[in-house]
Image (cartoon, rainbow, N blue to C red):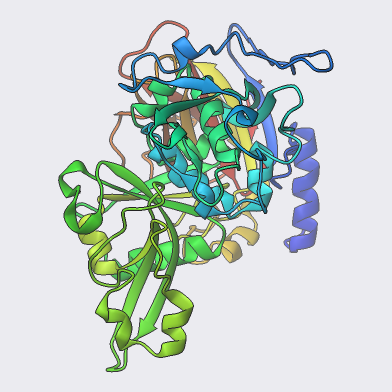
Amino acid sequence: MAYSSSHREMSCAFGRMAIQDGYSEDPEGSGLMYATSDLRTKQQRFRQSRPRMSRGQMWTDEEFVPSEAVRDCTTRKIVWRRPDEFLSNPQLFVGGAERYDVQQEGFGTCWFLSMLANLADKPRLLKKVINAKSYAPGTDGICCCKLWKFGEWEDIYIDDYLPLYRSKDGLQFYGAMSWTDSNELWVSFLEKALAKMYGSYCVVSGGGLPSEAYLALTGGVAETVLLTGYTSSPHSLFQRLDKALKTGAMVTCGILEEYSGDLGLMGPHAYSLNRTVEVTSFDGEVVRLIRIRNPHGTNEWKGKWSDRSREWQTLAKGIRRKLRRDRDDGEFWMSLEDFMSNFTQTTICSLTPDFDKDGQSDPLNYVRRMFGEWGRKMEITIPGICRKPMFSEKYRGLTPEGSIPIVVQIIQKEVDRSFYCDIGCSLSDANGRRIPDIERKPTHAAELQRVFRYILPPGRYTLQPSTARVATNREFLVRVFSPCPVFSNK
């Protein structure tokens, strides 16, 4: 078949190919095109249905009982109460959701809450995981949250009992809560849904990575940039963060324990990173600033460019008034230099991968999903239609003539969250020659998910997720992101 190189005809051709190869539009409304193959020997899928209660009855979740939920992760005596037993006017949302709502309390879930604060500023994405229909106070005691786990969105039903402790001022939240209004419950419920999905508050309180939180909240692709020993220019990092935020990505940053207490910073701890800006002082100096928020809702940076820092006086009053927020809400500004000196990593999260690492998601909108078991090979085929100029125009300066970029994401199914197998990816061409990813990453690493980038000409390839050590029949999910449909063995 002959194809025109015009974008319109190319898009029509891709649309026909997508339909023929089983691609369909994501029903969750992401705008991505998905095709799924399942090569597992046993395909098990369990969906929880909403509990049925008679009018006037309140549901109690027997699958997530208090004795199991906080078995080993608190020294305080926890009591469990429904919202109307300790709040004056419980509501799921009070005036909508915003990042200032998110406040961490007794459990170590900063890795999740730092990402949740970012999600709160994106109503369309937040609505997918919790919305006005998720919970009705004083009715049946049921809240339904939706989280992404191993390739599927799962409905997580929880009862509305929440963990509290007694203080001299009465019952107080032990788990996450709303910083802006104690009657607001959406933050508490999402933390409880996460705890139920993993088995207990103790499991998620043991720490985690913001990249795992991003998977759970969006199903997107997260990549971590290590700042310790960072070899590129600081300006390139700032540009990447700036472009990522402006194009809708969510960003977090992390700090190690040795920095705890250093000018107000805490470690080990995860923070939200939600804005970048360049300002010019009266003497003409250009300063690159980064805005960060502590999910505790307090404990801010006390160095240069903190809320009451004298550096603000070097800027025009209008700029000062626009940027500075002198309030103990956990949010603060830092210079790029101080950020890179104190923080050890930053994680950039998008629904589709940033292939060239410039901070902007690239149009890799076709997602081939393949479920399998370790030790099993699979094939992907890139059709010859992909040789058209459309790709050189979209990826100018990135892709060689006749080749296209693809991103392979390997996700292992969690058996025990405290233990991840060392995982990697092996890709070979039709002649059996192994093709290294363009970043030449380490062969294996103990992570929930890993991302590999390739630039490939049309042809047939053998893809094999690999692991250094794995239990029998342990499962994986491969996601191949590409700018056009790719074929796979069924």
